[in-house]
Amino acid sequence: MANVVVVGAQWGDEGKGKIVDWLSERADVIARFQGGHNAGHTLVIDGKVYKLHALPSGVVRGGKLSVIGNGVVLDPWHLIKEIETIRAQGVEITPENLMIAENTPLILPLHGELDRAREEAASAGTKIGTTGRGIGPCYEDKVGRRAIRVADLADKATLEARVDRALQHHNPLRKGLGIEEVDRAGLIDLLAEIAKEILPYAAPVWKVLNEKRKAGKRILFEGAQGSLLDIDFGTYPYVTSSNVIAGQAATGVGIGPGSIDYVLGIVKAYTTRVGEGPFPTELLDDDGERLGTRGHEFGTTTGRKRRCGWFDAALVRQTCAISGINGISLTKLDVLDGFETLKICVAYDLDGQRLDYLPTAADEQARCTPIYEEMPGWQESTEGARSWADLPANAIKYVKRVEELIECPVALLSTSPERDDTILVTDPFAD
Ligand code: IMP
Image (cartoon, rainbow, N blue to C red):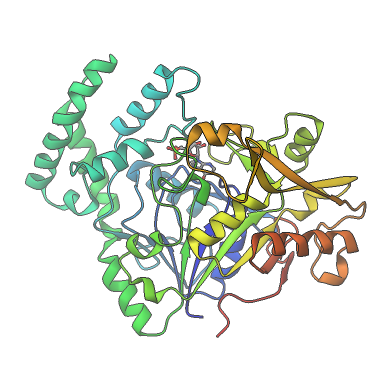
């Protein structure tokens, strides 16, 4: 298969970074197509840890082209800092191996300020629990046709006109929230300064990728967040502000949907969520604590403690369908080592009726209680397993049951953060 999309199939933090890095070995181009530096991808390569937020995970590998597509929202100041940090770890980043789509909207300082001010002003129940990085407000400006895009940085008159349009909207809003108005000249200067550092990476990404595709190069589309945070299909309004599902890979870079050959869903062997919102299988007991401690469930971006719960097969079955997932990569199976009994949510009970999916209406979601199936756990360690033969029988049974319930096969099994601790069943890039 020439082109592969990787998406998170739960609420993010499924371990996409490692799998994208693992697959990027076989790819020529690695492209981000949505989200921004709200993402946090941790890569462990030969014991060295790289923490990426805005940069595509392929950047740490030599000889690959990394691409930031137009579906992303980009904080240019953050990006330049991240580039410096990763360079200091010995990774080469140049306009030869990193390209940013010219039509990518820019996250401005005012977006982060608005994001945080709204969250602070929100009462319990209306708070989203955002990462505070300005993601939502920047996407609002994009669809509101007042965003400043990478290409606008190249021309002073255009940039000034774009700033005026943005401030016409933002200054009255800020006044209402009791935040100081943005100084026009200061913002223009700030943008003119960062333009020098960003513009060398600007490119017509749609054109470059279509040429790569025609030349038979392999493209890996790197999703961020997870399908249950999708603006349309997630647990709205407790979601991020972009489309996260596989269909976005095409619009997020400018390539036809027919160019996508395989969709790989990343699925954690249990469930986690950061921020507010429904979570039917959440565990507020010792089992939840144990999953969090064993799984090191703290956000890469914000350091927040993640909420933990049992595997929800009903939800993953739903996200597999919505993204057209061909195979999953099951991650963090080793975190389940040592449990006497494991539970899997197979459906929900809604007012006495069995439902095999999570309904859209918030009040119905709140009334859904999980229907669990119990499975015996295993006491042996699965950490670092590299073949099925290394896995205890009950772990294999658990994986097989997951496959049946979500109606999707396991393509990869990841058994530690290390790149090579991976069991390959189906290579998504195989012809
Ligand atoms: P935002 O994307 O910062 O607007 O945050 C909206 C929601 O998405 C919040 O619940 C965040 O915790 C969640 N979120 C955003 N990015 C990630 C991620 O990379 N992993 C997990 N959750 C995320």
